[in-house]
Image (cartoon, rainbow, N blue to C red; front, top):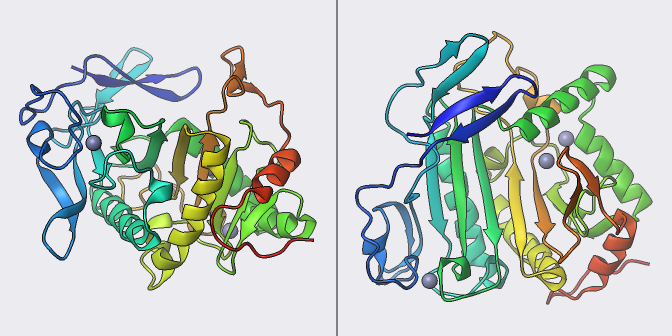
Length: 338
Ligand SMILES: [Zn+2]
Ligand SMILES: [Zn+2]
Ligand SMILES: [Zn+2]
């Protein structure tokens, strides 16, 4: 049985051990378990977004071998100087379309808007669980094949601990806010829009840019122009999902021109309802933090670490990547840049 262990030297959590297989999975026929007609090969739906004729357009279910499980207590235990706990949480799969081989970028904008609302609802629902400190939303997209690798889906992970990278972002955002009384992302966006050398696309509401310290070639960050710490709360406001969907679609179309393999992840605030280790646990996060979506294309031979210590080598600086990404026509009229 898998468990969560804390590496005390880096404060990094690791899930170690065998992942349990869900009892309602019957994977005997081969083929793609995410295609319509093969629903019996996956756990039952938790949520569905349906067409007017009653057929599903997107469906959510527990992962067939979840990393985190809803049942049970945390049972956090010390072992000498070490820490371990049960893998309590949630691990859900969102199949984004009934059509095999279509990527998120190629779905109609109104369908993407429905998906954004579905993602929002899953995050808000899981954040009602006070055992969970964070809910991750991400996708790993690979070139289409006949297997599930070729069927568009995302993953939702509710965890009782903060992912290390998010904790680092929260800490540095908090430090910047303490020093300057301003959100670090709002400051960066202001500079990016002024300098206009790393911005790839923008609307009145959203902006996409290659971050100054891009770790991956053609890495793109997409986020709201106005300050908001929470993707799920932002997408709750009327019209926001409908406004974000065509912009996200166009960003993904651009990125697919660089590589068909993409890692897409939403970075949002932690669960503020969660049990708190200290009274002021992330109490200023709504001022400090600014949600964003990170897109990392897997460009052959360019997604490299130097060693395994997290030191990155990216041969294409952000300004150069932005020039290339701007020049692509994602299939709609771009605002003109001089
Ligand atoms: Zn399929
Ligand atoms: Zn901000
Ligand atoms: Zn981030």
